Amino acid sequence: MSLSNAEEQLMNLIWEKQKVFMKDILEAYPDPKPASTTIATLLKRLQDKGAVAFEVFGNSREYYPLIEKNTYFSKKVQVMIKDFFNDSPAQFASFFTQETDLDTGELEALKKIIEDQLKSQQP
Image (cartoon, rainbow, N blue to C red; front, side, top):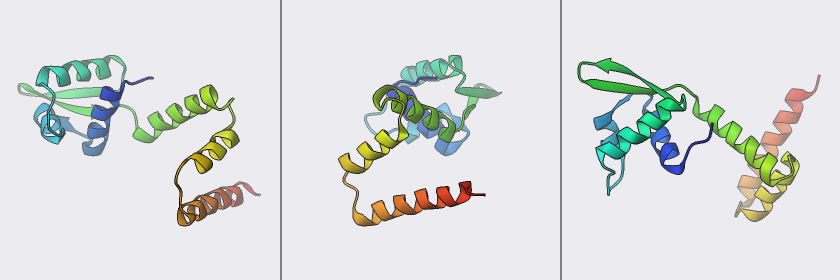
């Protein structure tokens, strides 16, 4: 599933709240707020893509996510690694650590994550 930037922004609001009405969505957007028709169009697209569903309460719809945020972004990163880094997580990690402004503490934290993952894979 591929989402546009606007759809991802809306999904982030839905993931954060888990259940939202249109008024909640509009309140959560920073100024300048999009028109409610724009949000309605994005919600329809997200429904068509199987990303959200809704329950009806009177005249209102309460939207909720059908996909987990971690699942969506994990697949997005996998596609990026495949498309831009020759399907090599090592090339991606090398690029990430060299091209971002990570300080020593952040690099040490990444090192610990990798070491912990290696330990968990040993018999």
